[in-house]
Every structure is written in C-alpha cells, then in structure tokens.
Image (cartoon, rainbow, N blue to C red; front, side, top):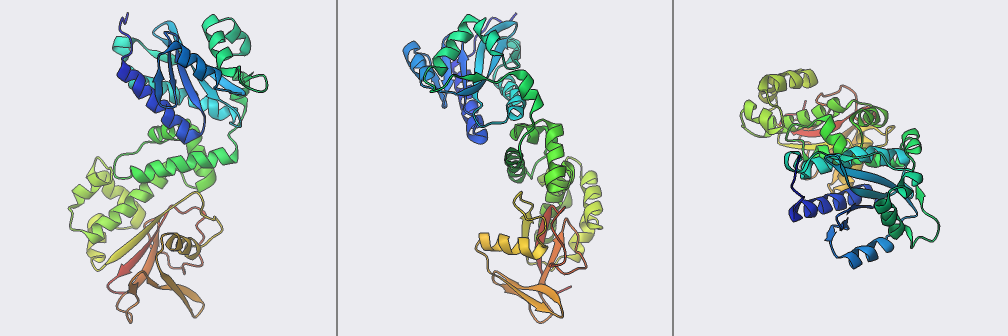
Length: 362
C-alpha cells in the first residue's frame, strides 16, 4: 500500500491545472484536501483561517461536488460552480479532472486517484468533512445552494453554444499541434468532451469526420512544404506528424490524386500560398470567395476580385497580381483544384482552402 503523501510541487501543479481548466471552460473549480489544503485560483492554501475565509466567500449558488479518493481512502473533494453550465458538460468534466489527477500524482507511490460521480445533498450531509466544506463554501450565497444530482447530469445534452465552444477548443488545439500526431482522445480531453461525443459534434457542425478534418489540415501543410522548399519527403512526413512515410504518401495521393513527388514536380513554380483552415464561424452557405474575403480582411491582406464572362476570379492578393497569363492565383479545396469558379462552391463540408500563386497560370 502506498505510504507517501503528495508533494508541494504536486499541489502547485494541480492548482495550476485546475486554474487552466477554469479559464478554458469558464467552470469555476476548486479542490479541498481533507488534510487541510485548498487549491483555488492557481494558489495553494494551507492556513486554516485563510482557507475558511476563502470557502466562506466562494458563494456558489449551484454546484457539483465530486469526491476524490486516493487508493481506497476518501482524500478530498472537487467543487465546480454549475451556475449557467449544462449538467452534461459537468458530467463529462469528471473524466477530464480524473485524467488531470492521474497525470500529476504517481499511482505507484501515492495510490490510484479516482474522481467519483457527484454526490446528492443527502450523501453530503452524511459525511462530516464534506458537509463542513460545502457549508463554508455556500454560506455567503444569497439563495440556498443547489447540488447537481448525478441523475440530472446524465440526462442533459450540451446546448449549442457550449458545443460550439468545445469545437473551437478542439480546432485551436489541432491548429497549434498540426505538426505532430494528433488523436481523437487527446483532442477530446482538451475540449473536455468524450471522444465519441466530440466525433459526433464534428459531423454535426463541420460535416466532416474528425480524422478527415485533421488529415486535410496536414495535407495542406504538406503541399506548402513540398512546393515551397526542398525538404526531403520523408522529413516532411515526420514534420507534419506521420510516423510512416508510406502512410503519408497514401493519404496524400488519396487527397490530391498525386504522390508527394509528383506534386512537387508539377508545382515547382508556386511562389506563394495562403492556407485558410476551417473555423467554426464559417457561414455554411457562404462560397469559397465569401470565406476567403472574410479571411483576408480579418488578416489585413489586400484582395482584389474581378468577374469575366460570368466567372469570378481573384486578380491579386497582397503584392502579387496576375501577370498576362504567365502568373496568377488559383485555389484548391481539401487538396484538390475544382473546375468551378470560386463563387460557385459553398464551404458546407470543406476543411481547408488554399490560394496558390503560380509562376504559370493554369
């Protein structure tokens, strides 16, 4: 049986992790260790009077209370402010909070840490330490505190605003980590959702499955590297998070219709690429032109569009303009160049747009 106690560094790391969780989710979260330690607002409190003052002024009107055990003993409790937060989202946060504990506390020396399902008010009242903890934290509330029961948490669905917030977290994480392997489980953890639920949200709001979205972003990055550098293909494969060059080549050809070497050979005249990854705020009914114009405007990039014989085309982006048929802008969507004009294709199920300036107009 483990005999060690968490270190000060453990508590500081957990305090920071909970503060990050609060910042990302807007779910105010604190942890109380029954040995007399409070983690709140990225601080570790050990002075009894200071802890009592902090809990007294916490003021949660509604909350979910998650008991935490270490090995086989009750260790402490996590309290989450559930005011204006869907109960389903709180329920999904439980597994994320437990994962935090597993990352910070070594199971071999400290024992397995488990975050339980939230307690009912009757259960809280039967546990003296928890009851005192809750009483101090809720005394300052103007109305009686309401404990979120587990039955309600399981029955509620995430509302659309929270779903969009979670997808935004997922997209931002993918964007920042696109140059390494990315799994659904890892992204779901960052979005505070279960993997299966995040997968459903991608299909519902982006109209593409998770792996297709990630691969489309990776292939777009590979196209930039292949056309704008001389980096060997096997190195590019590694740089965008593929562990095997053969698998990268397979995915690349599936997306573009060409092998990486064929693509490099045929696109050696490319001078500039603007890559526009899918954002949750894209208007699904908008066209490639609409979304591109919004992107260039928000990034303070000049973009001039012209129409000829009923077709719309981009005349210039930034400092680069058409050059009498010898140079010009073309666009690709999810790795391929469509035959239609950019104002004829909606972005309903698209993942990434690229504007490419070629040395010879196609």
